[in-house]
Image 1 (spheres, rainbow, N blue to C red):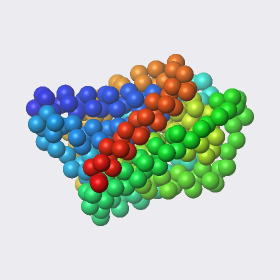
Image 2 (image 1 turned 180 degrees about the vertical axis):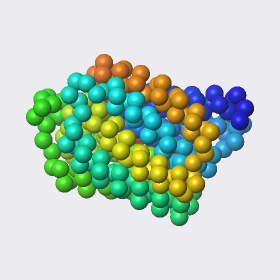
Image 3 (image 1 turned 120 degrees about the vertical axis):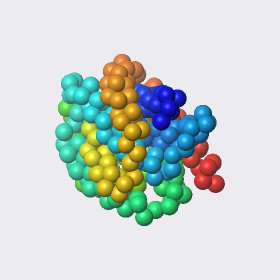
Image 4 (image 1 turned 90 degrees about the vertical axis):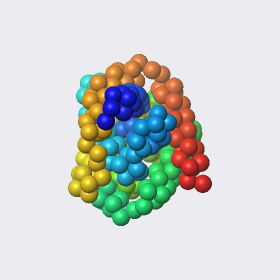
Amino acid sequence: MDITFIITIFLIGFIGSYISGMLGIGGSIIKYPMLLYIPPLFGLAAFSAHEVSGISAVQVFFATIGGVWAYRKGGYLNKTLIGYMGVSILIGSFIGGYGSRLMTEGGINLVYGILALIAAVMMFVPKKGIDEIPLDQVKFNKWLAASLAFIVGIGSGIVGAAGAFLLVPIMLVVLKIPTRMTIASSLAITFLSSIGATIGKITTGQVEFLPSVIMIVASLIASPLGAMAGKRINTKILQVVLALLILATAIKIWMDIL
């Protein structure tokens, strides 16, 4: 590992974690393609899809801790929502993370592409009036939330993501959760999800530890900074940025698959 490699991995982790803290996602939607495509552009060793998903899983675990800590005050964390969706996604992500060892590189990329495409479509569905609901009056279907989180967990565990890039549009579009509560609560749910995915990846030998440590350091610095920025930005802008980010990633992944 030379200095160019270390700096490249650190910057990927920093940029991805800053955006993840700001938008309430674990960051794998950004860091998965960055880890896959950027190192070879600089003549550095390329990671396999298995290695990328392993590094992403470990890094998301630490990135979401920083984001949740920054959002801990202000009533944005919905503990009931976190409980129902968090437990379900934890179980699903462990199943997906452990089972992913049986999949091919192309299979992992295909699952990622499908998840990103679904998330991109959902982000462009109109979300009228959700930010006018007082935070202490938010209601949602608990069992629908738990079922959807379990399904997302399986898919996200396979690709080493924590699934927040799909959880966020589900919470906004299906469950009608206000944007800032969605961002804060999804970080907490993503943290629980990343536990299952991380254990699954480590126990099956899919984690490169030195790149993971570099990404973790970047995450702990950048994620709280992103969360602080997210509190100050208009919710409509946050939604548009996330939608465009997910769409761009989905297009790139599908171009490679096809």
